[in-house]
Image (cartoon, rainbow, N blue to C red; front, side, top):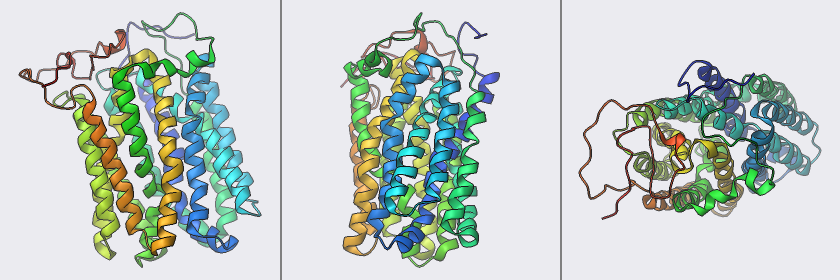
Length: 439
């Protein structure tokens, strides 16, 4: 039976859902971030360029994010549990199929299309379900779930390098397929939760199920445009941070260490920033713009660093990128209301796919033309800075004309029960969520 509480329980089974979302994030984005360690072996085996192998991750990212609205729509219609469980099976089959690849085309189809389609069915429904279980501690819960990315990278980066050295890339992909199958039991933990304000019946129209009407809201449109630009550079380190470290002469395990320290900084920052955002001291859109800009600057530093300083630059990048991640999803309930958060998550992932599709191949092309990844990381950082500048147009991203209210103990959030008009942006801070004014 579906529980029907008066509002988000802010705990209880929600922490189990957070653990499931943690594993889902680790077995999707975390795995994809570490997969770049196999690209040099793939390029050598098939005698192809870095740009050609980069299309594997680019296609996986693009399919995952472009098809995320489909996962959200299916979740809205039939619930998150069956959708995520089916997605886990598809992702696992993609890795198993790719282990027997005879050309890069087979890898494009296996990892890019099949595994990407499976990941599209798991991420948005899991994160959207998690947001429905929390109110006051929502950003912290989202940040906890998103640490699965960094924790998975920390474990999988050296483990994948060991698998590549021991079993070769075919054996490594086969074993990764077995690991990815654990997405299925994670989906079984996503119990449905009915909340006040939910529609009485699932939408019947495909367009309504996809949530395309959200683009009529000015704040969400600004957010979507900025996030699409950020996506053009945000995922380049997922693919090319390890090859960049190899180009700098750090060796296989040195490159794995660079990925690992970035993952540690990323994971820690997601928790700290989630806690900070839930205090309501600074509006979420302002934090989003600031940490987005710091992420872009961090990529500049990574691109210009050599040897030992590259480790420190990777930590700085991980801290800024990890702080940005929970804010992207934490701000959505205030923009669209809790009833539309699953659909909004899918749409944001789709928009980021535009950058995810073009960013890594452009980075690989620039590397082939210039001989290293310096220009690639500079361009990627510039794209993130551009998107962060657009975030300034969100309500409360800039200080308002009126005096700020003194901090107080935040009451339960009421944003999920309101229709979310365009001029209002509600954050977990409660009483400080006021009408936006511009100077």
